[in-house]
Length: 176
Image (tube, rainbow, N blue to C red):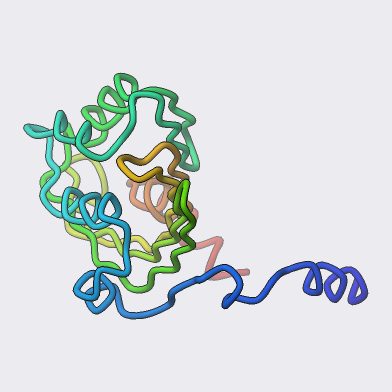
C-alpha cells in the first residue's frame, strides 16, 4: 500500500510545473491571476437566485457538463432547469470562497475552488440558515466553463436536515 502511494506521488508533477496558484481568493482576483470567466462565475453565484437563472449563460457553454453528488447534467438548457429546481424553495444562498488552485495553459484552465455555501431553504432544516463546505472542479476555455463537478457531503446538505431521518443520522454519527 505504501509503495503504491509513493509510486503515485512520484508520477505527480510539482505545482511549479503546472503553474498552480494557492492564494487568498480576493487577492487572486485583484491580481488578475484568475481567468476572467472564473471571476465572473464567482460573482454570478453571489447574486444568483430563482429570478435570474438565465444569467448562467454568461459563464457556461451550451455543451456544459455539470456534476454533483446527485446529478449529471449535460447542456445549458438542462442546467438552467436544474438550477430553477434548486433555487425554487431557496430563501437565500451565498458562497464564501476560501482557497483557489488554478492551472492555466493556452487552450483552457482548470480551477479548484474550496467554498462554504450558506443556505436557507424552506423545506430543509426547518427553514433555518445552515452551511455546507465543498469543492468545485471547473474547466473552462478562454470564454466559458465547459465542465464543473461539485464535491460536498450530501448527507450534511440534505439528509441530516430532514425531520425524522436527520435525527437518526445525527445519532448514528455520534455513535461512530
